[in-house]
Amino acid sequence: MNKDEILAKSRAENKNKDVYEQEILKQASESAVVVQMVLATIFFVTQILVDNGTNWGLWALVLSANMTIYWVKYIKLYRKFDLLMAIIYTILVSVMSGYHIYSMIVSSTI
Image (tube, rainbow, N blue to C red):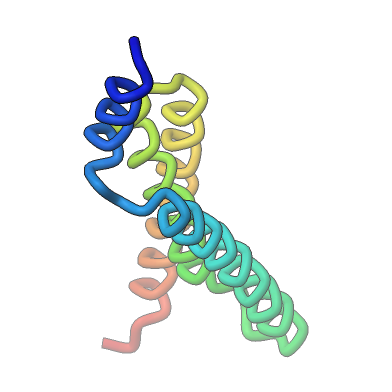
């Protein structure tokens, strides 16, 4: 393969997208997930300290970002690790969502 063929193949793979911009978007996505986790931890601990119980729905929302990232990575890259993590996060999100909805129904005054 000569230099021009390699360059043409690279352009076709990246579909004329800016590689630098893709890397920035990846870093922004990872940072957003970290910020979500920090805020959820602060809210979670504060809620426990003021004795208002536990809001599992908050964690379900936060973990759903990781769940989505791993599912997309698995669908695009077909890596077993990404599938395993996607399944684990899906189970966590499902259990926390289910418990949160159950708690709301039980405590409902309707």
